[in-house]
Length: 501
Image (cartoon, rainbow, N blue to C red):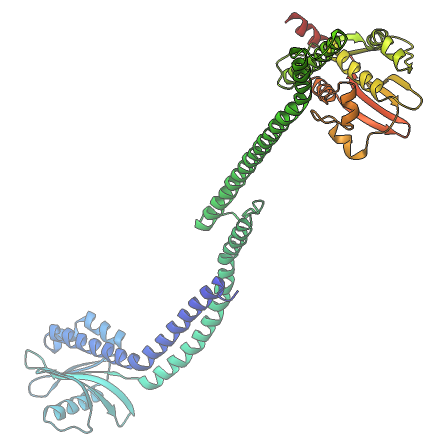
């Protein structure tokens, strides 16, 4: 990362330490000497003030506080009378005191053994730097006259300030380099500790920007970064929940749109199919009725015209009844009455009632139930399903003219199938035969009065009972099947409740 916050923090603080070390070095180099001289000058002035307060020589010699001050600050003091007699000395011998007093009167007379460096001069005293030729030492001293006309000189040794400053600077430079190195390591490690959670937060935010809401901030702490991480986790959780709700709502909306489009398509197809199905019988009824009206027929033809009109009216009435039945089932307007009944007996009854149609087709019907087979379902609706399957089988029977009905029980379900020999259903039409008004062979369906609604009713009936339907092709025919539950667990109470209603 080009502008890493870790590097920025580290370089900022390391630069600050280096700047401070350099600043201190410069201050030592240019200001330490003046600071040292000012400090010594203040000590000399304080010594003069003490001397002013001590009085004459006897009192001064008895002033223990003044004596201790001089010892502590390494001050040599000489006080003389107005006549030049040495009254007392501090921190030096009498001989040294007389020598220093002679220098004092040399200063008063304007006779200097050397040219001192004057630091400060007033009406009553002068502070200067002087060199003791005999001892070879530099001294900073203050001399002058007190308010009681006594004379004094106070001096203290002056170490080589330039040499001391150089040594101090060199020593501090070594220390400064060490401080910078140690500080750089400490700052680098500490900045890593600070920036690690920030880097983690940055990575979490990047993943959130890519809609990855599983990323969480794992750091802890009660500082601002920890609070930010917790808030980021809360935001991630909230966004994930919002995205989930949004996707759910969007999915439901998509389903609603698809359902609406499907309903619109079904409505258009329904109107088109109904119009198409009604167009032929209405045209026939209208044509034959006009023929009767115009008296263009004899008595024999009149009976035929009337039979055609009645037949077409019956077909229209049957189609309307089927549409009403299908509508009621699909929209749940008729309640399903679940009862337990013998489906084998039901099939046998249907076969007996259609025996004449079977004979007319010269068909062979095979159904050999060994014992009663009890199932759960709406008996009236199941009868309609079986009748529809059997009627389709009769209309499409070919070849061996064989129809076989079987009931097999597997794992609590009874599979009922109706097989007829004949032509298989084209593969591309398998999934479409359950659609309203769909006809595989339109011409043949029209011959026996079919309108493509029967299998749609079968599908709606079985879905209302939560059961399955299907069709299988064989080389020599087609088999339609459906399922019904045979187990009684959990269904007896349901049946009883429905019967009570």
